[in-house]
Length: 138
Image 1 (spheres, one colour):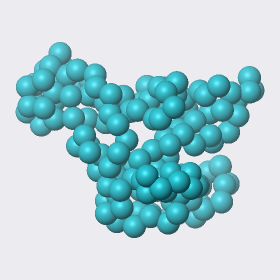
Image 2 (cartoon, one colour):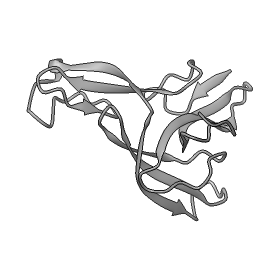
Image 3 (cartoon, rainbow, N blue to C red):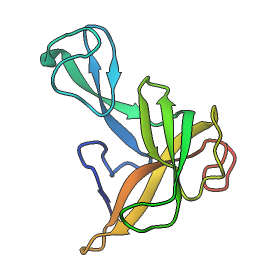
Image 4 (cartoon, rainbow, N blue to C red):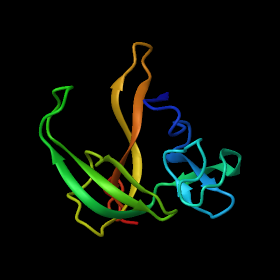
């Protein structure tokens, strides 16, 4: 069983991560995370924003190595990804991914960060190179 670390941002039930985004009905701007104050692009009111499911396929825009963090875990990488749906997002690189470079095609896979007291995997989407999905070429 999977439990989302950030339940407002994604549903942990599907096999592949899908993000909870938003879209402006007036101008078509797509957001992640979803916003509720109105469209920052065209100024449409909040009721013009609708919920949309966003696939996690995209292209690496930037990469950073994180060497120190509050949890004391070993170094990890963070990427900025321009999703095919439009928004630029930040997320961790999946530990099973080969090293990523700018302009690599990626998609998210579930990464179990830890276990809950009830035994559920606490998950978040993490990006992996699209041509290397857990050791298999696509």
